[in-house]
Amino acid sequence: MALIEKYGELPLSSNGISEPSTPTASTVLAHIFNAMLTSARISHELASKTVSCVIEAGYADVQTLNSSSWEERTEVLTKGGYTRYREKTATALGDLCEWVLEKWEGDLNNLRKDAEDEPQRIKSKVKEIKGLGDVGVNIFCDTMQGLWICLAPFMDPRSLRTAETIGLGSDVEQMFEAVGRDPEKMASLCMAITKVRLEKRESEFKD
Image (cartoon, rainbow, N blue to C red; front, side, top):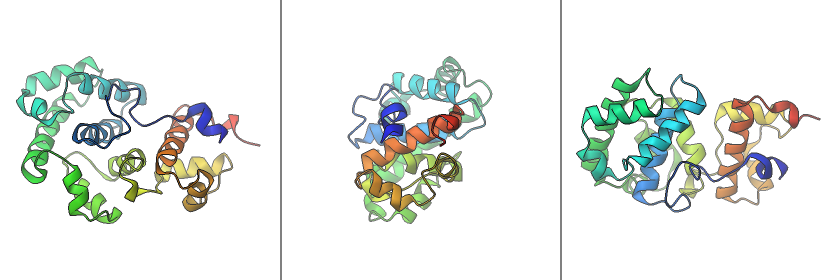
């Protein structure tokens, strides 16, 4: 698919994650950071830069995050340009760490197992995270479906509107068929459509 070839990439592969194609505890937590940070009312560029800074600080390792101070987290967020929401988000990262450690033994893969691979149950549990609303949960499902394949096929409603605009239609199952029912390719397709939407490149794909 030309759209994937031009704009698709493995989610978080350009943000410094060491194993973007494997659902390690660190990779799953990084996807939560991504959902939390990019769902705020802030430019996509700054949010993505901040995701990279949080990963660079080692916070995808829950023990490293746990040992960080509120001030240190604020500094990392400031480095990424996330100044508008830095105090609130530094607190949210601390709350997230506590939730992951106490409820899921430091590994969010235990959340998926507890939900028995049921997408709606996964979404409900992820939504327990403070600072993560419906938009954030949708972003998480968009990017994680390549790793937690039980989430596939999924597409953020905002991207679905873009898909329809550029001629892909609005049937998620049909799009999943078009990528060979490959969850990783579906995640890449979602990444590509998100890029088209955010960068207003729809005209490149209209007939």
